[in-house]
Length: 188
Image (cartoon, rainbow, N blue to C red; front, side):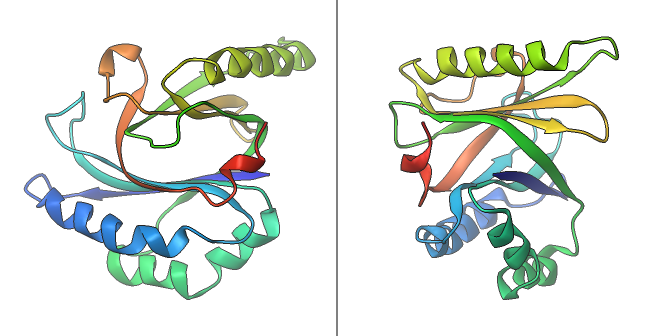
């Protein structure tokens, strides 16, 4: 597996309806993408759910890293560059990913945790697997995954939820505009 996200900061007065329309138009083009567990088209709107700026992002969990590489080098990613410029693409190594009971996501939560230098990495991974098992059983969960950023030695946790965004959960929260999920059923 392979995880990635890229984001586009937008002007404070940007009409976010344009982003919703873009996601509605482009989202279904991903619904049958080979090698993809899912792609979440997400946004943050200034003044809502703790957002201080407008942002449009794409969050991916790939089942096949070669499919991710092919995407970044093909016309679909060129369309992103043509529309918004070349983004910085964050990439991570998934440690664990699970599907939940829900199928339609409304919100996405992202949390980052630094791994202490003295941490037992085997225990850290085991704890994340157990945590994800617990989160996957919650009634609102569509999917949950934890990835490792080995450059910064941090965990990046994601949860797709069927519930409305709740900034009180203590994570960065995004509104899900479209969820393409061709390989979601392949996750445990």
